[in-house]
Image 1 (cartoon, helix red, strand yellow):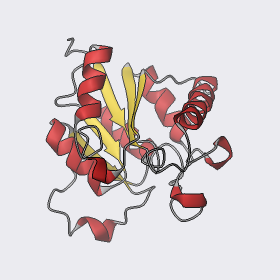
Image 2 (spheres, helix red, strand yellow):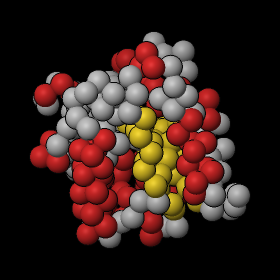
Image 3 (cartoon, one colour):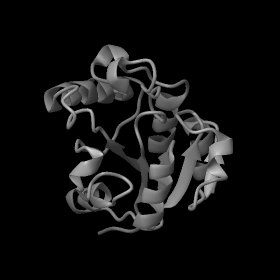
Image 4 (cartoon, one colour):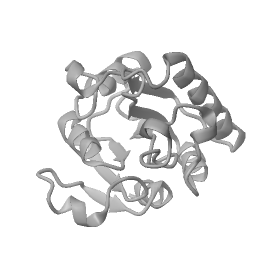
Length: 187
């Protein structure tokens, strides 16, 4: 595994696109029409690529396991997302989803680290010491367990006041993906 390669792990909902909780049926992005890029997110991804970063998306998508949408629906949404990112000049090296429900007790559902390990093996990358940008407590916990620097963005479901009650605190907090990317590139 090459450890000189710049890799960044990014959650999807609430970071790249609007968090679907509260306004979509079942609280999941179940069709492409419900996927709305957050302002600046495509530009942030392009900027990461321009600065030599490989991007890996790691996301829980339990709506599949709950039967709200199919793996084929998820694949279609992902293809459309990747096409839109590509059209704006960005590229994503890999996308990894956990489609299990919380009570399935799998190792891939964040805060578990199974998806990070799978990405390391399949993509020939190392996650330790890299960044994971997410919008929730589970993302911060997953980053901690995987040996990643946690970057919390407030563009999703988490409010700053919530963070004070967490056992594991994020390493960094920013308003959105674009702001976090500017920091990461410059540090």
